[in-house]
Length: 106
Length: 120
Image 1: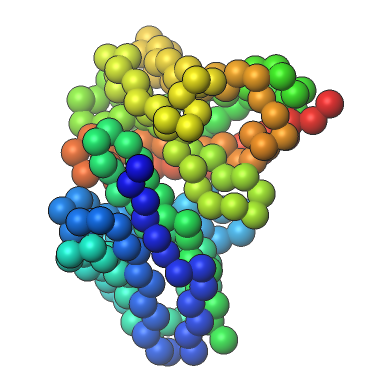
Image 2: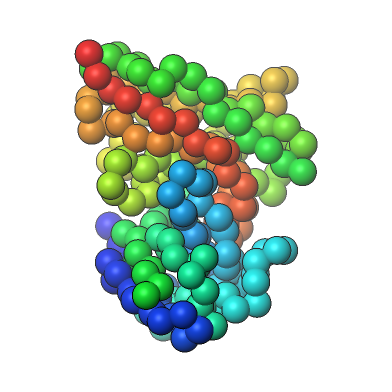
């Protein structure tokens, strides 16, 4: 079965750039989305179709997807960005999630 | 603005059936551009897709849950529903209903989520 792999945790200092990866076989041939989940809240879509930002999502969030890896990049990370992030893809009528990455802003 | 709202009992006994409707407002469930689905998150774990349905009634299920799941749609009520049979404590978690785009599969709208606890 198809799997998406994320690092369990990523740490970043305020103002620096955080990168979260999501790996899967030929993931670059599929569309990748990214969701931010804060405690007590529903997941929020922050990147879709690899690199597009929904209305209201800050420009510091960006995405890319090529080969076997999709990457979420947060530039100028703020303390309010601390959350769990999940990548997601759609393959043969199946919704797939990565295991999630806890972003800590120290 | 599209809104999705889950409802249903917060407590289900082991071996019984979990039933959750999701009411859609601010948009039509009969749109050909979207699927409607269920996602769950057990305590301390990640997101898990349960299954999705198209307005025509065509369904797609997570293979690991397929034998215990039924998702149905009622276009007259603009509502879709989840039934999960023979539940155990492992089915405890927050359940979300979602809308996802039919081509790219983006989950672009989420309900607020409802906590379901399986316990006697």
